[in-house]
Image (tube, rainbow, N blue to C red; front, side):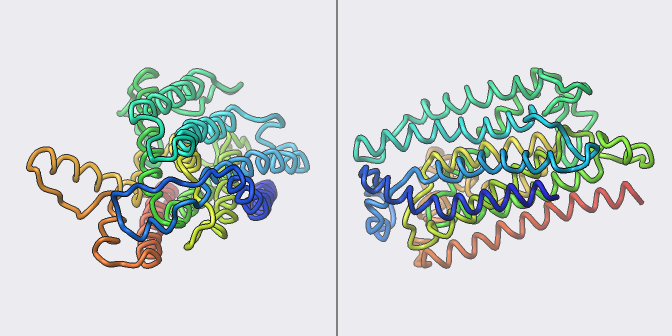
Length: 367
């Protein structure tokens, strides 16, 4: 627990005090967010607000992970997952950083061209595909000394579903799908000040709890597994908890400056990075299908876009005034703050349901 707390504290401090520096730097570089002319008129007042702020909480999380790992070395040997950075950390932080790089390129092109046209949709998806595929191979084909891989060959809900074994190739495809879906889901949610940041804090906080709970009931802990029939067959759960907690805390520090009226936007660099990390956490904790519930707000907003596109292409009519869903409510007259707070409540309810299902499975198994 000490390592998790240290990582979270370091991430929060770096993000809280680093974000104002990023605001000054990106403002000086004239890295203002281009605003589309199509959309709520109130958004035009945000023109010039610096973007690419996601680099701050990505950087903070990486540094915080290193600090947390230093704290691990002060624990008794039995409690140390590994003294060197683990493959789980490589996969999770790699997804965070490199999905963020894809988003950063998109942001950079928008700023350079002074319009909202960054990477093409195909280019962005290709970048996500390459990143997801590369880390999927690492997660499925590089085992630890005990033979456990970061991801498994079975599709999981609260744990692996044995009869849904799809093999390594199938698991790579599932991995890539999860990463691409979640990163685009967070990106679509990032449309109002603080909305995606606050929702991500809740989801990352949930995965920090899940990771730590799995660590306390871990098959890799010989003392626990020897006297308990039920344990979690995952790899490096303490690392998972530490990274999730660090990312959540870094987002809290960023939210101080990102809440309405935002002084800086996370941009695609932050949104794609967060989505990639959350998708990686879902796979690493063996909660792939449960992530649909935990990240329910991202799913709802993504589905609003899908429904809008299908309806318009098949009937020529729109279901919503505008998609993603948050803009529908803006055009319906809701204030931005009301939408953000209410959507945070929805995100919190989804997280609570997901954690409830996770814990109820543990109680049912232990009972």
